[in-house]
Image 1: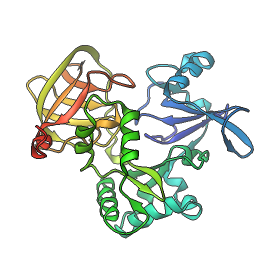
Image 2: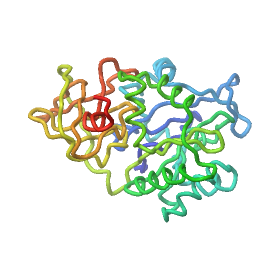
Image 3: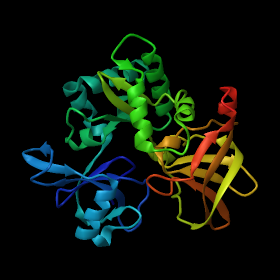
Amino acid sequence: MLKTRLRDFLLTKDDWLFAVSDYFRTDGIRATLRYVPDETGERELNGVRYKKYDFGPAFEFMKKNRPEWVRDVHVVPESEVKKVLRPSDVIPELVNSDSRVRAIVKVLDMAEIPRTSMGVTGSMLAGLQNESSDVDFVVYGPMWFRARDAIAAAKQQEGPVEELDEDMWQRIYRKRIPEISFDEFMLHESRKGNRGMVEGTYFDLLFVREWDQIKEPLLRGKDTVKMKIEAEVTNADFAFDSPSYYKVEHEEIDHVLSYTHTYAGQALPGEIIEARGVVEEVGNIKRLVVGTSREPKGEWIRSLTWLEKCGYI
């Protein structure tokens, strides 16, 4: 069986490129279509032009061309996979060829983070980046938190790694279309430390579990009702994962999941959150799911503790 995890890429026999979207598999590898060979495509790799597919168009393409692969994501049969592209494998090459990746790696080297714990995903992993491509930088497991702190420190010093400017924050906010105000969004983001700029390019520090952290799959349950809760976060070890996971103390809800990156790292252990989403019943456990659609309306996570500390509420 092919060993895959979140943020790996798959190259199929059709030369389609998929981003792996789950640590666990069903009857195939759960992924999302990203690039397809197309003469009109704007990206090029080894003389072949590729078209990039965003979330909605990717589903339209798959429903037309491989409807049997379409579920809540795209399920790629292992027999159709020609190659697995792993984020950590491209670090040596990118350190030599890309000054932006080299600058980030240098910061993490100084923090004594092994290069085997680093990776780059997205268009750079596929070899389909262009001048406007962001850097989707991966750090695996507990080393992610050390990396985040190192990046935060580097942003306070002179050098290529910088804080985001106002225009970039506005761009991220508009892209996410969250159900919280821009000011509230910025208050939450101000302490996360997982975004930055390097040589004028936006980068994101993405969390992926180490192999020994990949245990039981998040079984799909039955959606019931919308609910808003207030609860104390008791564990946030996977708050920057995808989905973000918050264990909470609440009379009904066992944990809160967020499928939208906006609410990754939104709260710390010991903080009281307000969350609104869909209650999902899995056996005798109820969880609250935030981000049940691409642009979730009426769903959010707010740290009431942090907002109160900031004088916002």
